[in-house]
Image 1 (cartoon, helix red, strand yellow):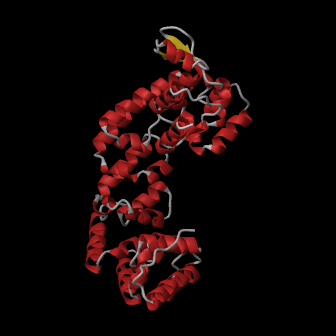
Image 2 (cartoon, one colour; image 1 turned 120 degrees about the vertical axis):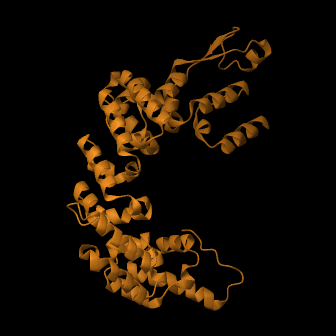
Image 3 (tube, one colour; image 1 turned 30 degrees about the vertical axis):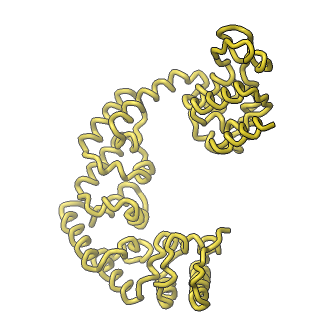
Length: 370
């Protein structure tokens, strides 16, 4: 549990009000103590500005916990202010009259809310749905509240025209993009329709699945994605299954791979292309160029005596014990293993290679002082 920082200058009344504020949140919206602390951390002045009556008022209006967690600043408004904003919205769009649906608009002055809604109605006259947000909800088959909640992080939707949104969504859906993918990445709609079309055409011609983030990526990232996709396709001798690939390379059972992914969940989202360079480096062997005889003797536990020699490859069991190492940058892995070997540090585990730079440096420093 995180501790709430209390100023030394606070008096008993201030501390009491802070405690009362947290208790109200927990009671009204069933928050845990930790969730209440998170809100206090994110909104450090909210405890000074809240209206006691607003807790009861919002609760009576049906405000649910998830909405409160997303918009805790609602309690800094008086009940009268909340009602006036809700009235503006519900008058034009009755189906948006639920506070959980339109709470995202309440941060704006009444005049701006009125202007926004007026504009949305005007531009929707020539379309089937009453507003662009109704269109999004209909096209993506989700409740309109789910669309409105996107406005908190995607305010560009407020001003983006109905026609632009409709065209962008239809292009994506017609190209086979999943509705859920569009919903989770509405940023793609900021791109001009012609750009979206051209990129979709390129991807489909290359027989590459269309994803919204690829459609909006910078040109270099777009080209890199196509190149890397085909590189990975060439490595699909294991049926595009990372688990099968790891089982084959590490000579282990599926249960071992599953345990690796449980220990380091990021490995579940990795690709063969991502882990292959690290596995090749660790398991196949690594070239080095030491020619100093004294150094060779010092490093006798791993070196072959030649002017250009191969370091003994890592045992797969060490990789299995440290799955994090497969997702690290290859240069980092190389540098750290070389440091261990040139320093003469004998290791029976790779745990230190997978740690932060500070922890790795401390490990090497402690070894040197022995």
